[in-house]
Length: 400
Image (cartoon, rainbow, N blue to C red; front, side, top):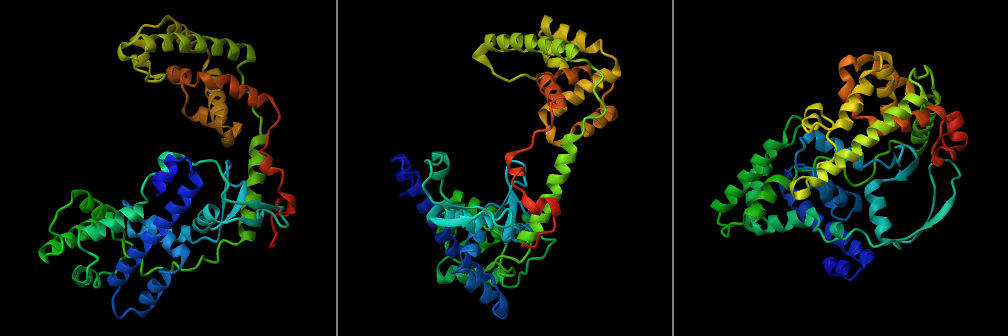
């Protein structure tokens, strides 16, 4: 149904159906996990049964199908992150505070709500609803991994009474420990398939289902508390963390010393030479057989093998700089490409790694030189999200 809705342009409906399929499939994983739980572990069995009707727990079981190369220690860490009641996110990592990711994702696909911005105390309120643009079809017509795994468990005979007996006999004596690796899980999953074959539960072999069971059927989760979000971090914790980060960003972005030694005139001359090289290189790529658009590989060997005069000229110009100017050109390139690290950090880093032998590497930063100089010359520019910080940022101590 979701696939057909996407084809009709009904992305919103497809997202709802897909979310339901994802959640309902998780119930299969939970009940099979209940069979893996030892009979005498009352806490584990009670928690697993509670997970059957809990939205957060079902979301975690679904997500676990994608943690196919994780050790059990990494799985427990991922579960703890999924249980966080709040988290920071945004283009600058700390722009806004959001409620639990799994629950928020589910609710935003299905429900209309009138919510408050919790990034700061007394934040503004606004409407949210599933009224959105049609999501990417490539995402929405992909079958949820939890459904793929649930179907695979069924196809290999694991969901019959006899198949579940095989699961119980192999898994109830196994208690996951932090040192257990993903390879051990894959081996145990494969061993389960062997025993299902021997028990006559899996006779029509299916390579895709076997691959899915081996690599995407997760570690047992019955040991873990999945039913409710954890208590930490609180909104106050994240507001303090956000305030600290914003203060640090403002300090870093304001640093402009020491000044670059290379002049603007020289930077513009070198940037023009680099642009001429790029144009000649693009013309060369377009003329190659099958129009191999391999980008602009600035390695000395591959570019010089074509004997481009524009590149030789660029090398001569950059090579004529003294070593301090060369370092500043590298720092300007880095600052133009990644300003969030701050000018001072890039300047010091250039002093540590750039030498007279770095001419070819510095040429590779050419498209960022003038952008870095422009950033250095103008006052720091902060994201709009950093301006709505209120007293929480100025004090960094709000417990609201």
